[in-house]
Every structure is written in structure tokens, then in C-alpha cells.
Length: 495
Ligand SMILES: NC(=O)C1=CN([C@@H]2O[C@H](COP(=O)(O)OP(=O)(O)OC[C@H]3O[C@@H](n4cnc5c(N)ncnc54)[C@H](OP(=O)(O)O)[C@@H]3O)[C@@H](O)[C@H]2O)C=CC1
Ligand SMILES: O=C1O[C@H](COP(=O)(O)O)[C@@H](O)[C@H](O)[C@H]1O
Image (cartoon, rainbow, N blue to C red; front, side, top):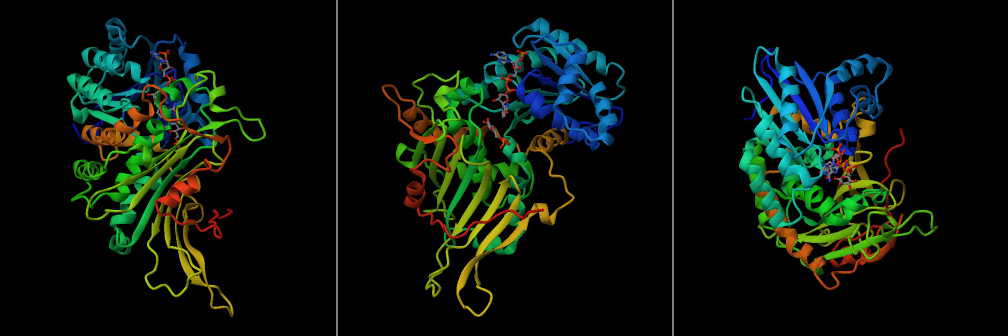
């Protein structure tokens, strides 16, 4: 059921965090819940129950939770209040008795509730246990006098077949409107800003098509390697880890038609249409690479990670060109690029416009609109301007909406805060629907099978840890028509 969970002061809500001993729970889930708590965004009568196999004393568990939360001196008492609402139950993910014990603990918390008893289950778990855990929850912990919401973390399968299998098994127990598939990039401020930029500005609306836009680049860069997550990563690779979900989701919002309303189903209907219009990728559409040691030898290469087989050909970098076969975008390349162990952290969307017809100022480059997702959130537009002074040369300059300067006192919420709030409010617009997933996997599955094909697979190019990009990238983007202006670089304001 949609809508806020606790419209009634007498209702209670329990959030159960499964995998509460894990990396995501400590790094993101609990800090996000505290962020909502301290700003009074959690519903009244809220409790949070951590659940995992590890046996952890409650005091130790609370210590671990608080160690990852940044609280100012003024927030210390709120943090204590929050921790008092956090409890922990130890149990297995495939065992009825364990889930019955979890249910007993949750029932006890909600035993004095006068209104309805809602439950939110956050599966911060490895995918291998998604299915048994979702079954156990439905059979033994489901609320019968209140709403239930199940939050599922990526990866949602490894290809079309495994994703369909996961969807079918989840659907045996959970209704689609109870399932919230998280892609945390949909909770990022600048990704949430995209629809407003596009649909609430008349000038962007008018030029948002193949007549004016030459190409779109969506880039994700990380300066860190797999850092002990090599075992997980090697099974998935960068295409499944970042491109098939985070970057493709951004692409759909950049490319979709205006939804009839902001209702979740209207928004997601438009996103699915874009995905269905993209032709499946082939090996000639992609550049694959894997990081080796840094040039100074200080940083280890991917194959040095303990969890990674010494002969792994799993890509840690990928660039791919997508073409959307519809009236608005026919012929416009959408180039998605993502990689680990690069020179910096950066996620951005770069829309490069067409050349000026009959241009009389050959020195200027194409206009670009850049949405800097992170860090240093900004929207800036590269455009031609007269060089101030006696010269009449046209030079590239920018109109710059840097958030650090324009919105000085605003704290940008973490993506998980924003998405957990959406779950509590029953707003599914920023969550992945089952048919979106199906259409997304259709685009990638043939390529992924080819990459991982028997007898050799596709060998990635090697780049040094800390490099700007693999050597082949500039030629790859140039082949798809992107023109780089090496003479110009935007830099965030120094505040
Ligand atoms: N970490 C991150 O930054 C991100 C993670 N995710 C996704 O979130 C989910 C959780 O991630 P993360 O917290 O890193 O995962 P972890 O590997 O830390 O696992 C979470 C918990 O699950 C239990 N667990 C681990 N391995 C197994 C296993 N083989 N069988 C049963 N239980 C196991 C452990 O708890 P115990 O043994 O105590 O039961 C562990 O503490 C995953 O689906 C991941 O893809 C998504 C985005 C980012
Ligand atoms: O989903 C994932 O995202 C993180 C990057 O997230 P960000 O919010 O820090 O940009 C990435 O490191 C991880 O490999 C991936 O699984």
C-alpha cells in the first residue's frame, strides 16, 4: 500500500535491518536512519531492530552503530535517544525458528501499540540470501495489522535469467507495491534535480533533442580500488556494479519524455519506454579495462586483491555507447563511463550540444551543460563569451550554479536518507520497478555473456591505478563524436 506509514499518532513502526552486522548497515543504513530521526522525519513510535547471524551484545552493537554516526555536541543527546530505539536479534536467514524469534521480539516492541503496527524490512544482505530471507520474513514476521515494506539492495540478479528468477521468487511472497528496489543514485540530490531542470525550464525543454544535442556522457570515477571487496566484485564486474544500474538509471531520466504527472507509475512508465528503445550492446560498443599497479608501484593492482583470481579478466573500467531509437534521440550517442582506481572521485552528466551552424567564430567549442552529481554539486553551462577588453575574440566561459556558493547553509542529505524517507512515505518514484529491471538486463545480457564467454572471454586493456582513464578512452569517445576542449577546465569555487 502506498502513502505514509504512520498517518496516525497511535500507530507504531518497526524497521528491521537484516545484515545489521555488515558494511552497508553500519556505513549507510543506520547513519541515514539517525539523519532522519534527528530531523524528526521518522514516524512516531519508531523502533529499529538489527538482525544478523553474528552474536553481538546489545551494548557492543550500539557502540558500533554510533561509531559510524557523526553527531555534533548538540546532537549527542538525540543520538542517545536514537540508540535507545535500536535493538539487535541474532538469527539465521534460512531458518524458521530464527525468524519466529525475530517476530517475537518485534511483537513485544509493538505490544502496547493502540493503532496499527507497520513493518519495514531492509535487506542489507548479500544476494545469495535475498530469497530465503524474504520468504522467512513473509511467513513469520509479516505484519497482519499494518503495512509491510521490503527494501531490496542491488544486485538484482546477474543477467536477464537470474533477475527474472529473483523477481519470480520475490513475487511468490511479496506484492510488487510492497517491494522497494534501491538504487541509491536515485536518491542523490543532483539526480533528483534532473527532472526539474528538464521539465520546469522552458529553455532546456526546447533544446532537449537530437536537433540540438550532439552527445551525452555520463561518467562515474572512483579513486579507490576494490579494497577487500574483490571477491564480490570479481563475480559482478564494473558493468553490473555501476553501469547497468546507477548510470543507466541516470540515462533514463535524461532521456525520458515528460511524465503525465509526478506519480511514481507515470514516471516509471516513461523510464521503461526509454529502456525498451535502446538496442542491446555488442562488444564493438564498449571499451573494457582493468587496473594494474600504480605507476609508482605504491598501489596494488586488481589482481593483487586477495579475493580475485590471478587470471581474472573482470573489467574494473567500462565505457559503452548507447543509442536510443526514438524520435527525440535517434543517432545521439549516450556514452556511459565508469571505473575504479582512477585519478579522482567524480560523477557527472555532460550534455554536449551541436556545432553552431554557419559558425563565424571557429575558436569556440561546442556548448555543454554539465550536471556535477558529486562531489561539489553544481550545474554549469559552457558557452561562448567575448574576451573582455579590447579583443573581440570569442572564448569559452561558464554560467555556474555551484551549490557550495549558492546554497551555503543547506546540508545536502545522503541518498539513503532521502530514499528511506521515500519508503516511509510510500513514494516509489525513485525505486526500480520490475519491468524496468527486465528492460535494463535485456540491454546488457548478450554483452555480459560475450565478455564472460567460454574459452578466453574479452581481455580488458590494462590501466595504471590512479590514471585519468584507460589509454583507449579518448579515441573511443572521439569515435562517437565527442569533442574535448583541452584548453578549458571548470573548477569548483573555493569557499
Ligand atoms: N557496502 C556497500 O557500500 C554497498 C552494498 N550494497 C549492497 O547491499 C547489500 C549488503 O552489502 P554489505 O553490507 O556490503 O554486505 P556484507 O558482505 O557486509 O554482508 C552483510 C551481512 O550479511 C551477512 N553475510 C555475509 N555473507 C553472508 C553469506 N554468504 N551468507 C549469509 N549471510 C552473509 C553478514 O552478517 P552475519 O554473518 O552476521 O549474518 C554480513 O554482516 C549487498 O546486496 C550489496 O550488494 C549496495 C551498495 C553499496
Ligand atoms: O553501488 C555502489 O556504489 C558505490 C559508490 O557509491 P557512491 O555513493 O559513493 O558514489 C561503489 O563504490 C560500489 O562499488 C557500488 O557497489
